[in-house]
Image (cartoon, rainbow, N blue to C red):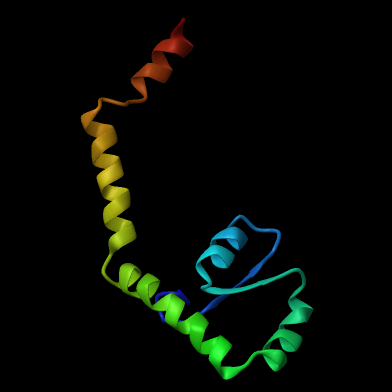
Length: 94
């Protein structure tokens, strides 16, 4: 939701998303939520603006349905390749 609104995100360093947020510079990664006040008070306007600028392409992609389209195309590829639960059921039946 934050990325769709054009806002940088705040994530815990213990989450999978931390590496993505760091790599793309689209938000803050914190070890403890109590760090947020200190981080914001030491952040310059230029640093915050850089985060916002880095979020912009993500905002556009989300707003234009890029990730939904990508998921749908992946689903269609799976269907066209004939992946099905039948393979699992056949194995379980043996």
